[in-house]
Image 1: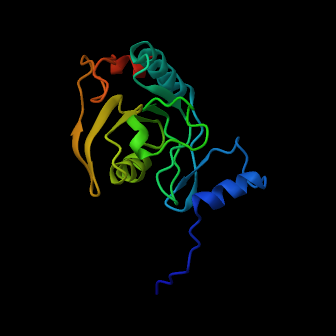
Image 2: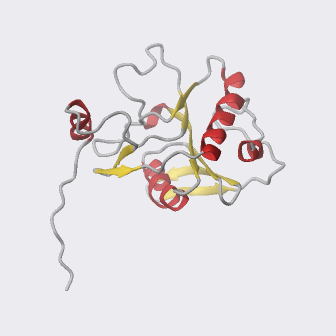
Length: 187
């Protein structure tokens, strides 16, 4: 016999109140996904190096065209506020001081996965597609590959590219920001 128990779905406002009350601290490695507080995996050195390489590689290309955002919240709905590894955001003079960036502010979203690749691929990436994030990159550290997700819809991304190791890539909305993606995995 299967018993279904009622579950309490938290809102992002509840999540932030938990922080204000000291139940959660900014040092807790958690994010809010579809009304649930989800533990995030610790960041290993290969993961951190990949993010640092991307930061170093993208920064010179962006100028005033985009803002780099590293491991900060993205407000998708009243029930979801993930913390992607990196985003390229539309520039704002207030640097999103009053409100976290939202889906319409994202030019490129990047997830780096060492132990969380299945979760990122099956939960987070479809969530980004449902919220119309135009382009999401997934660096799979174990498989040593990049997957580029394009054409978002409510059913997920309609197009997935897997560039070869020698190929250089750039975000569709920032074609001048060309990087050697394989270098992000080998550092």
